[in-house]
Length: 199
Image (cartoon, rainbow, N blue to C red; front, side, top):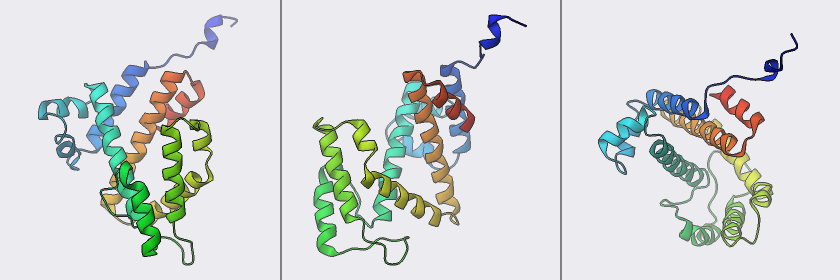
């Protein structure tokens, strides 16, 4: 009854949990085109191991690359920005957006254009790269919060499209993976529990 072992929580090791989750992602995304997409960067045999969760480091890197591109496409589509949307072009694109007076798609009538938000996000990115601001300050930015809200509204408007739902689910899984890795590296027990629960 009074054993000190009562306070010990047994759990699957972080490496094996991550490996299992990567295998689940690969299984759920089978025949979706993800394999062919990853083969543009990695060899065929490597991709097979990545999607089964065996090549962990490569798998994480590959999924983060795909997720970054999907997020770029999502933001570009939500704000009617042209692709490719590269970091070096963001200021120029934001200026062109102002000149063209473009409007957003998928948002409520009368909502102001997101050009100023994109400009502010570009400014925050450059400040972060110049180390003139901290990650905490950037994460607390009102512009990023507003962009996140706009993207959430836009994602909701895609709910009746099956292919869109699949890839949005994939992005959600990568977000869980990202949170799990952060929890493991920072020793954040609460974030670890939340990520494992969401898996």
